[in-house]
Image (cartoon, rainbow, N blue to C red; front, side, top):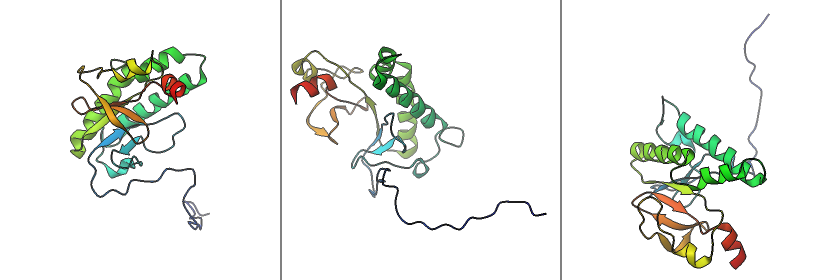
Length: 182
């Protein structure tokens, strides 16, 4: 009686149409830790092209693997799912994703710091912004960490309106404001 694993013949016929394109940049000026509740790819993005960077392309970050990145990604996606559902836990989840001092943000900022140290590439953390008072008050927002001006003249990657190079943070104009002024 034979035991073992039988190799099943297979042929690659193309790319998965639902997957994001992978970053092909030769040198990256920055990295971004970013995911959503529907993302299936790596949460690490190129700051230049915003395409995904497979984790195996960076040094292992925790205990000879990527455990800290994957834990943060799972927690973030769980919070994003709760806030998208708009019922149980929406307020908690939104605060976790948008407050600089939340457990989720602290965890993500620590992951960014570790990635930056290992890759020697600035790594930015995204702070989600759901609601605001007005477009004027949104534009006057300052970095929640150092209180400096961080509004960009032009959006980055059609998503980020704010960037603090000192604190390595990104954010957006509140979605409820953006949607009402568009």
